[in-house]
Length: 476
Image (cartoon, rainbow, N blue to C red; front, side, top):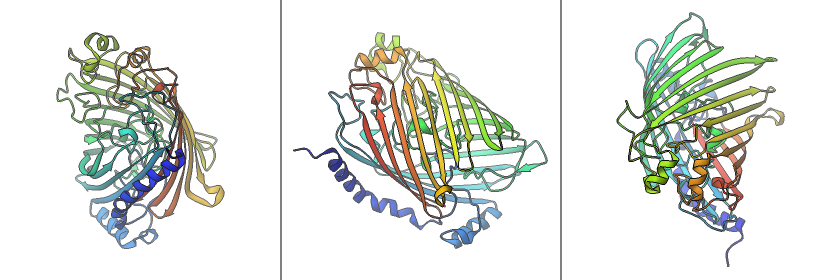
């Protein structure tokens, strides 16, 4: 006799907890300091701020201060997420489906961030990372997948790789300065108010583009893919989320213009990048406007992107066969994308965000997820009102739609790299997320997370899905 959904899920979670406890405890030697606030996408550490005596391990914090004075940067983090779904309605399933059985999986990601100042305004940053774990159903079954820390190339053993290795040159265009933005990927210190910044190497497109104060970091905020970034914008990345490229940014405190060019994956959702950079590429442009309303800070960002990859248009897939989904046998195709990204402080402790995103829908999505239109919005509340100012409560939602071509492909039994139930009763996918992130000690946070996914993978015949998660993060 099968267990009730809640009992079977909790039994699966207990098994996962037992296997993961030692892995989570391993990085706990670190110096623990820094705020619970967002630190940018996939924050590899926290900025080295505040007096050393305020850290959990003051000696190590003092060492970090001395190293920065000498032109060296040393920071790090470890994030563990245990996530499970209860059993849900599923009259059928396919190769790209979320499993309807109660299930639990976990992920662990660690980073050791090393940096060196070179000459005036120049620094080199290297991020050494060890990851382990899997997403639910191997990170398939929902376009707005519920764990942005889940790796499409999951592993049961620790895997070492280098997600970031880049050179950054900052050129001052004004003599006055502004406080730094506590970016853990930068050395501490004031920044020129007006400046040019050139970044070259390996990093995430999200390190530069589509930033949002309230919804951009799965290690400190929302963990759903479509709440971390614009769901319908096919951001360049390999199967782990990183790419090679260059970005140029101009900022003056009120406006910013950012542009970048990046390598794209050789195959759909592939680990290896296409070496033909003159025929396979992605370019992104972004304009930012920073402002205040009634003394409350806000920002609007408008993004445009174009990708040229070995993707097929939907007609070609029907002509050439669905087995050509991973690579167009006849050549390269262009995809164009737009996104609008907004953030606004409403009170001292409450902020709101909104993203609208679109792509032309004529071809496959190649690298991020399978969504052609998306609207996401939410609120973020700090714990000032109950005496825990370092805690955060977040509530966000995303609705995703697909193009007519993608819908016909899925209805015909096609399988994408993240969706595909073998058939389709189409309805927009709707994901909602609620989390509470609590500061346990300086640099140590614990979060509880709940998500409800209606019409997973755009299929009204399946779901809804209840997803629960526990996140622990240590950063120094």
